Amino acid sequence: MSVSRPSHPTLAIVVPVWQLPREAGDEWIVVNGDARDRSLDPVRLAYEDICWLESERGRGRQIAAGVARATAEWVLILHADTRLAAGWRGEVTAVASGASYHWGCFRLRLDSPAWQARLIEQVVGLRVRLFRLPYGDQAMFVRRATLE
View 1 (cartoon, one colour):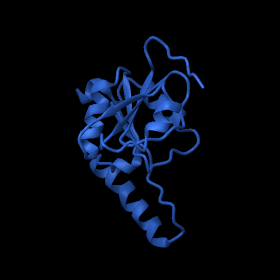
View 2 (tube, one colour; view 1 turned 90 degrees about the vertical axis):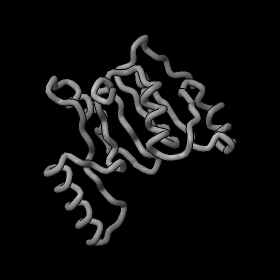
View 3 (tube, one colour; view 1 turned 135 degrees about the horizontal axis):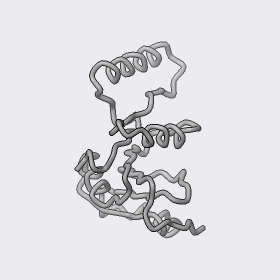
């Protein structure tokens, strides 16, 4: 399957390992933190339109390598074990259209029915509102110029 790419993408998605729910017009960058691991080779062949990078281990290093390669105005940092809810693209677009916004994140939702999970979600939400300090698992998006 070939996805056409515009001359200047509107959004770059940086994934420290890999995830593939993509849409035409996005710039996908996948950063493998273990160059010796060839288990992603079949996926690379199946998705040649994705930019595949190698970096040293560590989410921070992987994210930095992906952000350095991104050309879009906005970068969404998506951990491979994080799933975005339906409507995520509209949320990013709404924030991106506001000139005063430079970053955003999604609410944390744990895949567990336990009451402790709901408590953790509430505490994380409070942390974001009070301190503007999200966790990486929340899928953060930021203007590339702000990162630079």
